Amino acid sequence: MSKSRLEAFSDGVFAVIITIMVLEMKVPEHTTFAALRSVLPVFLTYVVSFIYIGIYWSNHHHLLHACERVSGAILWANLHLLFWLSLVPFATAWVSISIDAPAPVALYGAILLCAGTAYYILEQRLICLHGEDSRLARSVGKDRKGIASVILYAAAIAVAFRHPRFACCVYVLVAVLWLIPDKRIERNLHE
Image (cartoon, rainbow, N blue to C red; front, side, top):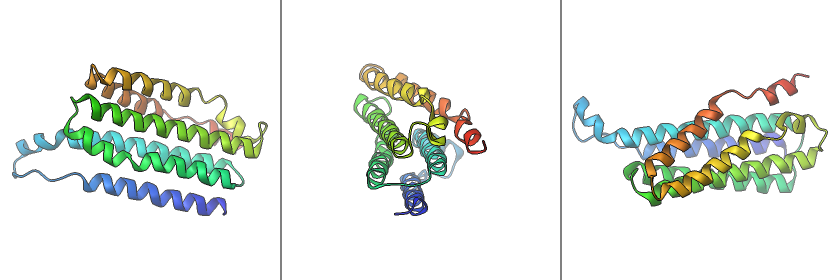
């Protein structure tokens, strides 16, 4: 399979994930602005999840742009990542109606943790394929932000059982960390 076909398939899955999430949002029963308060938790959870999917889509794009080829192991590592991301709409819907409940908040974090781990595996498989001295390996570096994210997710999952809202704040914090542009791949592509 060509790299472009893998990227096109992945882009389609990302689009479906976002579509499913937005379809979960229901309009308020009443036609006043005050009625919007009842859907605010659903909307805010959607925004955070949309940002996460956008971050993964953007980083996935840069990652594949930096590589030259893919292998069977890469295909499976990519599917592994897409599997966990495809569960984000379910977790988003559940946590949005019960943000104070430990189980939905912990599950949301567990899915983020698994997606972060899957992304790291994909990244490492690509580096293995291209070599430790490749442009891709130089671009990724030690991936401290990715490792820190996984650690923060794990901590937030543990916290979710006592303080679900604090755990949600950690999930938002990790998203904000990823919104800060990381130019390593772009910089190395133009060397």
